[in-house]
Image (tube, rainbow, N blue to C red; front, side):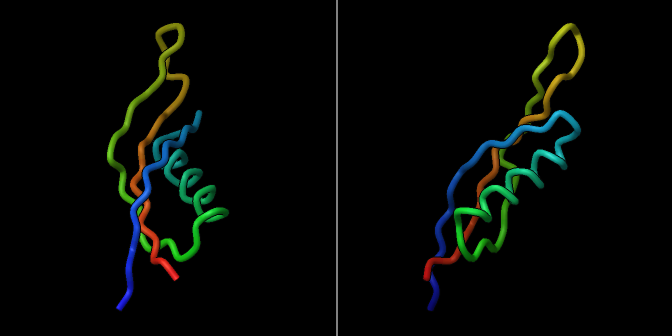
Length: 66
């Protein structure tokens, strides 16, 4: 039997939502072991001067406990 935990993280990219997700998962993988999935709970953009300056995502990352 395995037990999993879900943690919530936020990540930002100046390129795209996809890049923000990739950045978040890569960073989470440095700290959390056994990541099995991640899903986007929320998306938003930051706007400066009438243009999108950053893509923000809130991720829920699932990992299996040892």
